[in-house]
Length: 488
Image 1 (cartoon, rainbow, N blue to C red):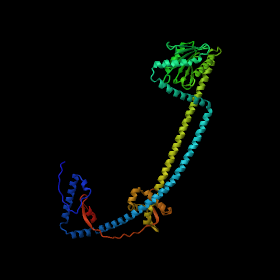
Image 2: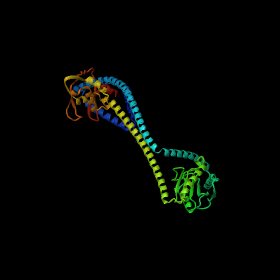
Image 3: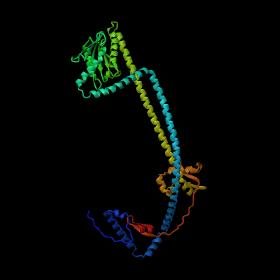
């Protein structure tokens, strides 16, 4: 938009308002247009009067309003002066009171903290009692589980070292290395009667090794994996064992990892049929003496072989053996279920403690708000200044609230004081016998007996010169101080 520049001359002693440089060109135009219209109308209205006649006419016509303005100005001046002093006193009193309240709250908080500690101790004792009951039922199994965890931790550490060493080796190399490792471990049977080990890894369906003993034969398959031995490897050795009906035992040996689905203990057994059994050996290389583990497995197989070869063992005995194993598995499942329930109870107890802590915190916050919001010292000065006791006096609380809100506008706004709080303050000043409820509604107004308003005298201390100013926006006459007009 193209701009027009004009020159305006002003008296040297006059100064421009600070806001004028912030006006936009459009605002400058509106300001000049309105000002010109105001001056033109003013000249037309005073063309037939002298200055003295104008002043006298305005003064006569608005004498009553001028007196009211003078009175309001004096009252406002006195109120502002006393308000400043009172606010300072109120602030100092509030600071002192808040210090005392903070000290009380610290004591309350300390007591609640001790109570929380007591709750924690009580819950800890309850949990400990429940844990002891469960432990009494399964001490031996838990001890066995601890030993297994210890072995597993050691196995993991060794497994990590083995993984680092085997990172850059090919799959075929790892397989041959695993077979070599198992072959070295199997040398522990060299002093057993009729022992002979035959390498079968090049023949499909025969496993990696056949271990021949005087009593029985074993089909062994060694695995050197980085991860768990998968299900397909278990199926593979099972099929190989079924093809070799003359071999009664199959050993699936995982050197550095566990076997999927059969890793609950270091050594686990699975019957393929009534004459063939699979043995799963987890993390063999992680044991301090792997050869000793293999010898233990052999002795176990020897005892199981007696069951296979015993002509007196019928189907009923085999069924009983399996039922015994199933019952043992069920007991182990029940123990694990109890442990899970115990962990759940522990978590529930922790949640209860947390909820109690949250509730106590909410109580503290509520009590703090009540203490702060119940501070009636803000009303005391106004009450003492405006109200006095009088047995014949009767005032409505609604009238007092309107008067207080008018006198203490800034205080009501800053402190967000509502009429309900003002009623509570009145109830602290007057006995209940002096309050007459107008209706059964809890929020209704009530009469107060025995009080009246104090009389206050206001005198006009000075005359105030005024000038006439016409507001073009609302077309209404205003009266302001002459000095204010000149400064503006």
